[in-house]
Amino acid sequence: MALAQEISHRPPDVPGAWPLLGHIVPVLRRPLEFLPSAAAFGDVVKVRFGRLPVYLVTHPDTVREVLVPGDLDYTRGRIFEKLEPALGKGIATVSGAEHRRQRRLLQPVFTRERLIGYATVMRTAAEQVTDSWRDGQTLAMDEVMNDLALTALTRSLFAFTARPDTAQAIKEGMRALTHGLLLRTVLPTAWERVPTPGNLRFRRAMARMHGAIDDVIADYRQAGQDRGDVLSVLLAVRDEDGQSLPDEEIHAQVMTLALTGIEAPGAALGWVLYEIGRDREVAGRVRAEIDEVLGGRAVTFDDLPALEYLGRVINEVLRLRTPLVFMRRTLTEVRVGRMAIPAGSEVIYSPYLLHHDARWFPDPLRFDPGRWLPESSGRIPKGAYVPFAAGAYQCIGKLFALTELTMVTAAICAHWTFRPAGDAPVREVATALVRPDRLPMTVHRRTRTARG
Ligand code: HEM
Image: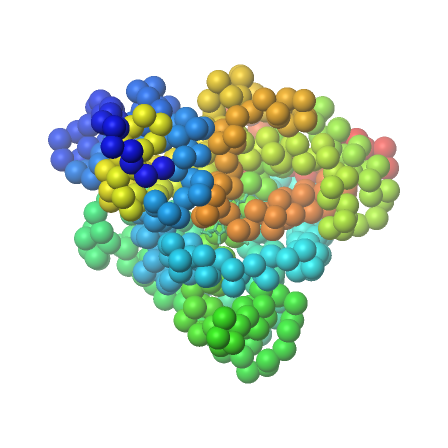
């Protein structure tokens, strides 16, 4: 909401800022502990990245005030802007009217008809991965699920590529981008120009990925066919003047979808298997539902609404293991709750913080799909559960992601059981996302009588 004249409250400073560095050290060292400790000071609080003031909104109401509608008083903010040199001007880095234009042009990528096609790609990718599993084998499930998400997305992006190293180039590029993101967000931009080994590795990975995507676009332009994939849609899209999109914009959208569409569902898939695998009751109910709905045949897009319990399991995973922080920047001085935030300020919201708040999710660390039964979920305030954000810049890939999580989990659970291997606890590591430090799991092929 734009500022009303009578507002005068300034958000409280979070104590513990270091000279010059502000809160950079605790943010980088212990982000999962720092966020709730900062939130204890109010619904809107002020922290510092070096000398840069950053406002953290911590209450579902103040978060919604920032996110919805979102692009009138706010631009995208620092996290995604930091990605612009790598991604180009795609949907996740532009703001305002240009963002609305791109969002409209990208809608045909996510229609129901297209999702049905991607769903088959996802199931096939899952079946191909599990075909290589051996009964009793222990797998690094986080890596396996990341690779599966990479395959599902790259084949949805371009069903056809004659070049064997395209997927690998995308994988390495995306890893480099997401792993350094938190660091690049809090450090000054000048640091990125320093030729550290990490910065050089980052530049090499980006150059390979750009080259791979340019090659695929050139191949597609030459072939000129609709292959039922995202790139075919992007090449067919026409703007209001009937012009096709320039290669530069198509390149930026492919980069953007690869950045946003691999690591997040990959990490979430690992967590879904982990939560199912470590709880016999949850595993038993998931499998019983899959057996009943599918009756032994392969899962399809049309089955998804009937997999209700699995849907609640996925909702609960997306509550517990959710992205850490996103940002906006104020265009004018704005009022959020009773606080005034100056024009040009960085604002942070944290799905992770909201989703772990005991006021909205009692006993927040407990994995409980029952929270998502209609009689319980109605009590959760709007803005308290935002795994895909809300408002103008919310996740355009939400249905793609939910389809992927459900299709892949159903395809795996129909034929396999899995349990975490060993007793070592699995820890959360905060990068741009929250991922497991390691996820060894032992898999067993299901027999007719095997349940749970
Ligand atoms: C579990 C998986 C996923 C999660 C948790 C997730 C979460 C999010 C969130 C929270 C945002 C908003 C960020 C902000 O507030 O600035 C976002 C944006 C976005 N996501 Fe996702 N996402 C997921 C999967 C995907 C997939 C599979 C795709 C593409 C196929 C995708 C494409 C995008 C794009 C393009 C944006 C920017 C949208 C815009 O600015 O208009 N995401 N995602």
